[in-house]
Image 1 (tube, protein in one colour):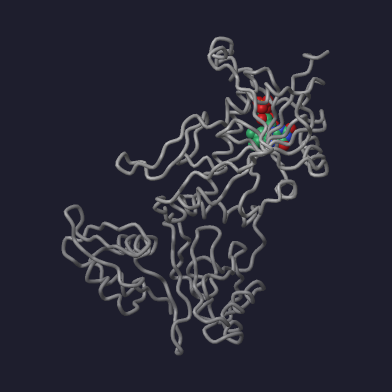
Image 2 (tube, helix red, strand yellow):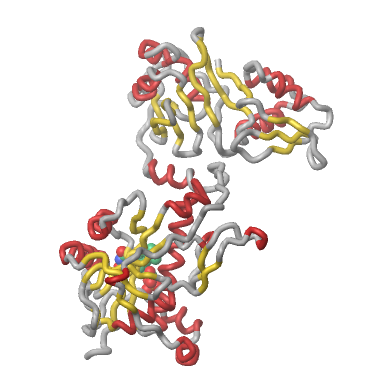
Length: 449
Ligand SMILES: Cc1cc2nc3c(=O)[nH]c(=O)nc-3n(C[C@H](O)[C@H](O)[C@H](O)COP(=O)(O)O)c2cc1C
């Protein structure tokens, strides 16, 4: 039997704005109308598990409104769905989205074969196993280790009765998984990859309840010290550029992806100008809580969610006048380059991959890899961080496109950048710092002929 319970002991108060304000640990408070106190009374009754029907009967609402309220209480984490057997609790389902696929009335018969959803993920959570939905973020906590075998066994069509032979509590677990859409009638694999759904559902508000950290200790990391190898870049004359740049409307209208580059190598002043326009630090702002600035950050020409600026520019240079081939990191505070490696093996591999990506039209002189320091936005934005980083990368790609166009250079984004090549070239751990976006740059054809 599937039952509803309170998740822990939520605080229930009335406030100036709500008859009933429920506060659950780690979730946003929930404000409800409850003029006659019946909702609060029904919730207090949930200190003992009740079935969906029993809870609905206690709410002074019609069936539709009662169902809607129960779904809201589930999605906001006030209550959970659970199941038990004669030995105690079997599993608890925590719901994280109002879009959760709840089917409380679906109860597979003991001899009815069902199969695990292809969107179900079995993983460790603290010291126990959970089955998580990649579609809506629902997490089913298994209260006994042997129940993981039941979840794994459901990869093949299995009946609740057969699940009971795998572990005590097996049939109850199957019914709970059915109630939250994690098992269903046997069916084919989905067309869209579950990991894409998981990334999406775990990184969007509404589909996940994001925990935003108090970012008090978020210091802008210094550019990597590379004192003796720093190569200062030429600084462009911005005042002059304000007069000579083409109008933005012309730049926007004429920007195209360029895959065939001219024979002329890039020059160091061009590289300096491009990076100065797009990526340098314009201003440093220290934390000032009195002014609402909770952490130190920098301002740069391109926007970045929360001014995190977690993306670093790494340059794989094949042909640039006065700059030896190699992989470099742009140091935005000093407007300089730090040498990462002059080893030609990773360089050739990365340039060749970019050449293949732009349809082999020409070998790019320069590849920019945007590499994310994941820790910084994660500490502020939690689950939302990765999706914000990809958006920050898109912002920078367009900034490079537009600046290159204004400068009379060619640029083409590369969608197939290889994070393993980047890790090999830089020696960085891809779970800590990894390339998330690439763009090649070169001179336009015809300028040198
Ligand atoms: C994120 C992103 C990835 C891209 N990846 C590639 C790529 O791998 N190879 C390529 O030739 N063009 C790539 N492009 C360029 C697109 O093909 C191009 O923007 C599109 O065809 C429209 O043409 P336009 O940029 O000239 O307006 C990419 C563009 C973006 C924004």
